[in-house]
Structures are given as structure tokens and as C-alpha cells.
Length: 363
Image (cartoon, rainbow, N blue to C red; front, side):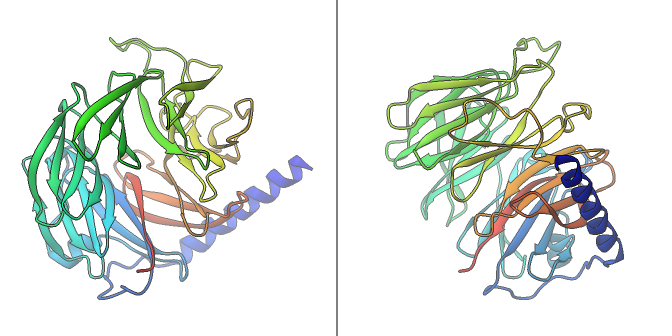
């Protein structure tokens, strides 16, 4: 039965590729879709080439629009579009190697403001209309900005680099990925660092489940790193008392899992293993795991086959799964969409190195 299911899956994936090859990608931009919703794709571009771009995809019509920022504004995004975040009708684009954040109107892609003077911005977490935090790959500080006035208003010293955010009440969890093993805990009312939690080396992504448990995926570092290498692991932390409850260790030290996500029901975890960091291992792809499972999954939920999956996200409304293949980071990559049960829905070409997703929901 399992072999039949795999064969059927591959046939559906081939069909999705054939459909996408017949579709013409549009470089036009929508003047107004404020009453709709859709998926923004942050295309990093090739490092130092300044060719990052922004794509938009409508899941309902399966229409993909590429280079929407450039088409609307007449100038490029910059060098390495790292992530995208939303507040009402605004989108904040973190351009890491350009040291800036571009603010656009999501209804027409028009540029409204630029937050500059940053080091290497990774993500922005918007607390309210007067406060947001920006993580940085190289700086030991979090930058505080006013997301309405687009100005820097302060900073918080972590002592190390920062990557992703997860908010829980007045607390903000911040993972420190580059050569570190810490999850920092920040009080968003006082802007004070109140605690830190030690996990496995290089925590790259964090989510929270329905039981208020924080899950942290660590890639373990890499062979030859001056920081050393250990087996990758998935750690579970009680967000209420900040205690590390359980560690799920990967069996093979060569595993380098990334892109931890959780479904809308917050009871199933998803991550990429054996993708671009794993040199296309035999059992590569997207893995799924229930929050009550006692052991790590042994086989991929969605097989990567010849694809090297790079980015992963789950639609918070439909539970559709989206992942990207950055290919060689020099040519335009692909995005694949899957039904929550793992069967393929669509495949479409976007910009160079699609590395992040952002969902615009109904307003």
C-alpha cells in the first residue's frame, strides 16, 4: 500500500510540474487586492549580486506575479531579502545584506519608507504600533523601532547574534543561531533581558504548540566549525516556567534540519531535513511529527527526491504546505504547494533563491 501511495504521489507531482510549465508567469502587478489574501515569497537573490525580488501568489487562482516590488517602484529590492512581516496593510521587508528594511503597501506594492542604519536585519517582530524588534546576524543588540514612524528608538543588548522571534504574552523568545546555543527571553514591556535557555548548538527556528510548549530546532553546527559540531536536536521547553523538558536527538550527525513549522491546529510539527544543507541525502524531504510523539520520524512525510528543499511554511488558514527549491542560487527557483495530507497541488517559478514566505490574510 505504501509503495502504491508513493507512486501516486510522484505521478501527481509530475502532473503539477506539467501544469506549471504551461502557465505563463506574469510580471504585471495588481493595483488593489485589499479584500483578498495571498502568499508573498521573499526571494533572497544571489549573495552580493543585489538581485533580491518579491513575488506574490494567489492560491485561489494559482496566479503568480514576479518582481512585483520592482514593477511597482522602478528600483530593486536590494541584496538578500531575508524575511517579510505584516502589520495591517503594511509589509516590512528585511534586506539583510543591504542593512535596511523596506516598508510597502501590500495593496499595490508601493514603497512607503525605509528603515536604515541596520547591520544585517533578519526578522522584525511588531509588538504594537509604537514598538517592534529587529534581529541581526552580526550585532549583539536587538534594534527597537517605531513601526509607524519607521524610526529607530533604542536597542537591547543580548551579547550575541539573533535570528527568529516568538511572542508569548509579555515575553519574547529570541533564538541565537550563529555559533551559539541560546534562546533569550525578553520582557517586551521593560525591554529587559530576563533569562536565557541553553539548547543544542545553533537553534535556527522556533514554534509554540497548543499546550504552550516552545519547540526549538537546532542544526548542531557543521563539521570543521571552530564552534564545534554535535548532533542536531529538537528541544521542548515549558514557556511558563522556562524549563527544558525534553530533547529529541537526530541519530546521524550529518543531519542538518531547518525550517521548523507548526500547523494551524498547533499539534503537528514540520521541518526540512536532508535539503540543501544535507547534500541530497537518500531520505530527504519534509518531515512531520506530532507534539505527543515519543520518537523522531524515520521517513519523510513529503519526499524530496531530486529536490533540495530550502524554505518551508504552512498557510495558517488552509493548512496548505509550501516549500521552495533554490536550485543553484543563481537561477530562478521553484515553489511547491501541497495539500495537508502531503499530495501535490501546484508548482510555480519565482525569483532567485526563494527563502521565505509571508501570508496576507483577509482584512
